[in-house]
Amino acid sequence: MFKRFLANTRGNVAIIFALVSVPAMAIAGAAIDYTNASQEYSRLQVATDSASLAGAKQVGLLSEEGVRQAVTDVFDANYRGPKRERVTLSIVVGDSDVNVVAASHTDTSFMKLMHFDEIALKVSSTAIVGRDKKIDVVLVLDNSGSMSGSKIDALRSAAADLTQILMNANKTAPSGEEPVQVGVVPFTAFVNVGSQYKTASWMDTNGQSPIHSEDFNQTANRFDLFNELSGVSWRGCVTSRPYPHDVTDTLPTSGNPQTLFVPHFAPDEPGSSNSNGHSFKNNYISDWTSTCTTPLPNDSTRWEAAQSRICKYTGANYSSGSGVSKGPNYGCRTNPLTPMTIDQTIVETAVNNLTANGYTNIHQGVMWGWRVLSPEAPFTEGRSDVDDKVEQFLIVMTDGKNTYITENSPNDTVSFAYGYTAKGRLGTVGNYSAILSKMNERTQESCTNTKTVGEVKIYTIAFQVSDTATLELLENCATEPSMAFRSETNGDLIEAFRKIAQEINSLRISM
Image (cartoon, rainbow, N blue to C red):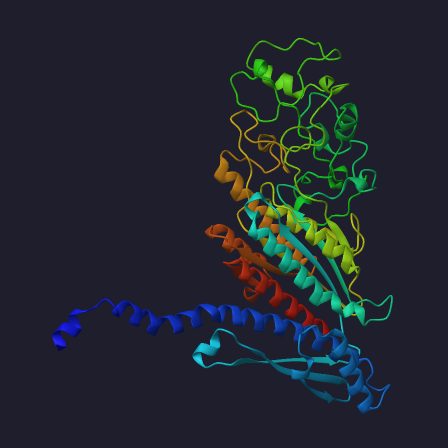
């Protein structure tokens, strides 16, 4: 009988499944329980930071009991958790500081199966009287096509979470003394500064920079070429300045035309009859018009003569409007940047409008992040560091390596931020690997200058990045190794932004 029992295995699978399913479910569900706990931890930290700072400002003005009451009132006003009755506050009022500890817990759902009914939480915050700093933060965010789907959704959520944590401090600050400003710089192959700056003093409206004419057979002004074309206007993307101004925050002045910013204008490339067998990607108007009848040479230079002639733009109609798949705005796919502001709604709108479409140029993102932080043109919202009261931060996030599009033509590439690489703005580069290597060099030099000259602290986030060179680049770009994050999942990305926000907030209220 015993042998027959051992031989009858029909019910064994069910028995084994019953034995292992409970711990398996608990382990899988633990991630959900910990996510809920992490969210509650963030809510506690936001309210505690606000409360300690508000209390510190009352030290010397109110009695100790009055300070304690002020701390409690501000905590209650800022806490967004579901069960305030669970939170225990410990408040210590010193001669020049206030320390607040908030303790609570979250109930578990799945971990109950492993006899863990709750997760204990404790956060603390210390604010020192008169030492709370002002914080300027710019989010430099990769919006390339590889960020599409759930990845861009996670980025929106992560950036919104960080914005809420940081800018919550402005709600309790007196008007005019808001401690936190935030800006947003989305980047793809370009950074879009906004078409409203077409006539800004730092834009080269008079065609002084040599970049205007580098693709044409005579002196040109790219703004004039946009005006000549019907059906299209400048979207707001700018090219990279000539080296070394592309890795510095040199003030743009008409006295030094190379420091001025030039609008991106991708030339019309030759049609098939003038291509000399080359493969061009951006042919969008005819090489022949009623105002452009000069014969082209019938030799190997025919393609260049067709591409560089200016006359063909006069009165030409670009019927695809402001499209970016072809035309003078080719590759300008990202939304305009948002200068630093104390208005949380403006920042949240910019974050919610993030879209994924295009290629990647980390160098351009870093440089425009620095320029947005700077108190001098092109954007002047950055605050000068007076009496060590202002700390400035860049948060640089990308999900991939620098990229550029090559072309089977004498141009070598399409015309993106550095124009045609055959023109030499990246130096002498003979192949795709050399182009990417040079882009990485410019990115690293920009990071170094931002940290040393600009005195900006840089956080980096590598989001599902596998390229070794890019991982090394981001680690070197960060101010310290601990400020370089690697995120493998959407949840990791959200958590990285949350940790950075909490670190910055702690610096602001304790330094």
